[in-house]
Length: 305
Length: 288
Image (tube, rainbow over all chains, first blue to last red):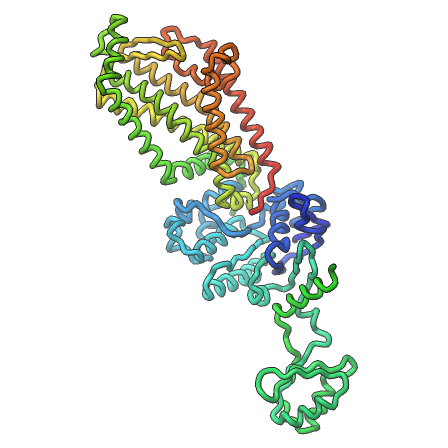
């Protein structure tokens, strides 16, 4: 659905995006992560044709954005950076204005999008009376009007309260599941990305430093969380095991253990059971996206001069 | 389900939306209200003994009856001239300077460009809305000036005196009204050049205020220079010279050839501003 090939961009001679190669298949929710100035907005701006690349190109659904922008983004909806509206006009009039610049959208489609984002009671009110969350929802309605196959969401949960964040997440997942929309999701809220996205790309200083599934990447040699009813017995087993590292976490009798590569976790578990440690929890620790993200940044900084 | 209407088929609706944006803004209404106040102020000043005596001297020295020609029509033309020159240029520069740059600054342009909108078409829509706005503003000034003039001074003949354009004319009420209508239309037509210049600067990567200020600076510098004796032989190169032609419709025999020549000249400036604006805007990167 999305293909970026050797896409690069500089501003005033300063590279904002080094040659970027990225592919997002149809039906995927792809998370784009990175700190401020990492190049996320530049990449999205290039994808939407707001910016002209210095080299390379972007394709949506096989259509080259830079040579046929009209066809390429025809079925693309976007919330790009902070949504802006005409505050002195109603929500409905704003939607109408944005839609009519590109194509005639039937009334039923407006109603569907407005209902989906839950603004049907307030759509006739002026936007200046809307809360931040309502503006975000209006922006989502605007993005849904072209019946998009691709939805580009840049910080869609920005400024929302916890309930709003939850609603936005559920809506995004529903759009992906029920309408098969491909979604490019850029956010600083790692917990949201963790819950929504199938795969992620991490940008750092204009470089794509990781692309893939953070879950799969940490599968091998992943630390295990151990909780034992008899901590002293468990500790004896752990101390006597060469190459094993055990870090106490949580309450007494709870460790994060990383066995040596040639020491299968199943053997350790068997030895703990044999020693009468009364193991009541032994499972691979699910890595948090935050830990994964920070680790990738540390790795990159270490390797880069 | 979806109707297959390309962006070009939606052109009239897009112009309509642009006009809605322009006319729904509170400051547009405030601006129009200011015009009305300004017109009443000028009218009140013209009722003072000195200006009144000056008109009386001029009319009676040429054998015309002051009571008949110092009418609502005569005052309306004076008000239109002053309001259009002093406030009209300012207002048109403000609106046209905002038309693109303000949307870029506010972020609504980014929202529009998230959709597959040809930038050239978007700008033509915006320029056209500037032109419609120019006509609406000048017709508002003309209409309200006439209304205010008639309320204060009543009906009568029309007397026009413009030393700059070399016009001294006298008409009876009916023809005077027709000439005034034609003059306001022509004034709107020539004023489009201010909107076009403002529009051009608005297409550049500058703040809206900068676009308006530069436009005003150009218009006033042009006016001042065109009135300097040193440039008397080069009048044809000044916008003010061509813009002044609207007063010529008050001449008994309207010099159409000269007026149309000026109109072509101003048309070329309008077209150049539109073309360059589109050219520059189409090449721009949009990034906050």
